[in-house]
Amino acid sequence: MYPEYLVAPMREELTRVGFEELKDAEQVNAAIKSEGTTFVMVNSVCGCAAANARPAARMAAANAKHPDKLVTVFAGMEREAVDAARNLMLPYPPSSPSMALFKDGKLVHIIERHQIEGRPAQMIADNLIDAFEQYC
Image 1: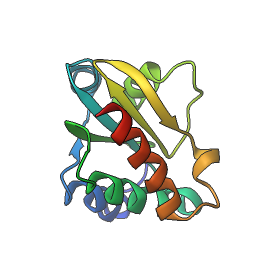
Image 2: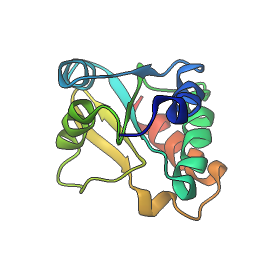
Image 3: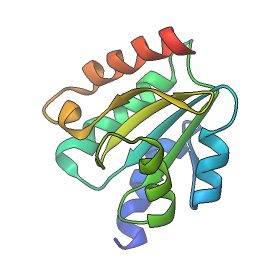
Image 4: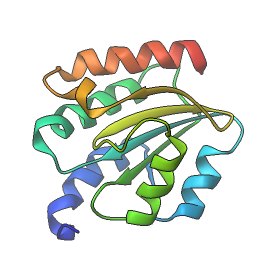
């Protein structure tokens, strides 16, 4: 667990543009398993990847065609929520940060940490926007 003062700005980077923070398994399951499209950002303190992942998620969320719901869980903070989200992302291994798009409760697109590291935010956002255009 990280001190809240450390993660607060990282949380706010997403919530200020409309992402809903999910804090427990019940909230995660309700959001992801519902009808429509849900974009899940597994937020992280990791500077090497999350520093580009958060801006990419914000850019993609601003696209004209975007998911019905934008949600986030924070790795290293709300374990129950993160575990529930990762369970729904199987067979992909746990990855922080990571991003996943669900349609009607089914995983249709995922970006893992290794696909984020070393890539500029715009490249990651373009990947997400392509998925949003296809599934949303």
